[in-house]
Amino acid sequence: MATVQPVINWNHFAAYLVRAAQTPITCIGKKLEHLRDDLYMIPRERKDCATLLRDERSSRQKHNNITRKRRLDLMRELVRTYDARSYNELYKRLSVQDTDDIYAEYGPTWKETAEHSIANYCKEIILEQETMSFEQILTSNHHSRTCQHPADTRQGEE
Image (cartoon, rainbow, N blue to C red; front, side, top):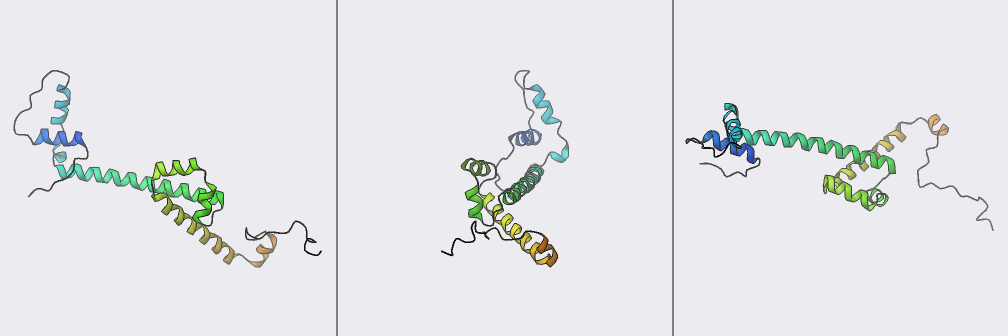
């Protein structure tokens, strides 16, 4: 019993039909003759429709992995650039055009990737602070970004 599968690549499907046909194909006119000859010359291992579907899935999976890596790199860079510690902070810092562009290229999964990048960024900061020696803390400024020094120290005395 055959399963019903959607046609993904019509060119490959047409080639499959040509190779699987028992009757010869008559070509009307000379413009399509080279296409018919090309369809007949496809090797035997490409004759099975399941092979065509498997090839299509493998190429799509590679593209998805590349897209996922690019999305992760972009989100990681944005989180570091804006020093965002939550999704709302990152979202407020991005312009409307930026969020539209990101959504157009990556779809709704960019939010999940942004949250993952933010969690990893916060984890890096915490690990860096935990492994820092006391001498390093004294020689560098490692205040949290919410720590604000008053502009005038005599402000509350009056």
